[in-house]
Amino acid sequence: MKTVEKIYLDTSIISYLQQEDSPEKTEITIRFWNKLKKRKNVKVYLSEIAMAELNKCHEPKLSFMKQKITEINFTLLEKNTEVETLSQKIISLGILPEKSHDDCYHIALAVLNECNYIVSWNFKHLVNVKTINGIRAITTLQGYKPVDIVSPEMMFQEEDDDQT
Image (cartoon, rainbow, N blue to C red; front, side, top):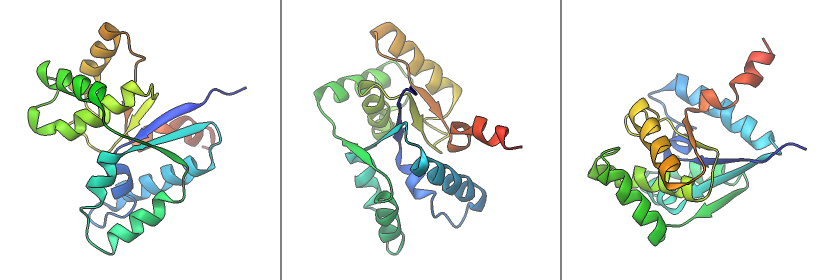
């Protein structure tokens, strides 16, 4: 029996399903999205933060993204005091700056809900060595399950390699 992979999607994944200024990332994101829809052993998580960020988009992209979200089954996560505490710890340890509070919330929600992966195109604040190592240190020291922070193209790489 396959174990269920818990995948947290940050806002950038949904946004890059239609991003005219980055056709390569859009193509990769669409492939990732289509594989995600077909996988049975995956539980997807989105957050109220991601939804609020998406709602700042203009039409027609907003309607497009809302329609795309209906294509997947997901659990909506909300902030609470535990999320706030862990988010603040990420900032106080210098892993991310104060202005990156929403990114800290994404990480905290994924960690506290024991996600296996955070999938993002945010290389500045999430998918980078400093953040990955910092979050690995926090999860280890605090006794949380580790979470991998990856880009969409990394998620199902082995499946793509098997087909070549």
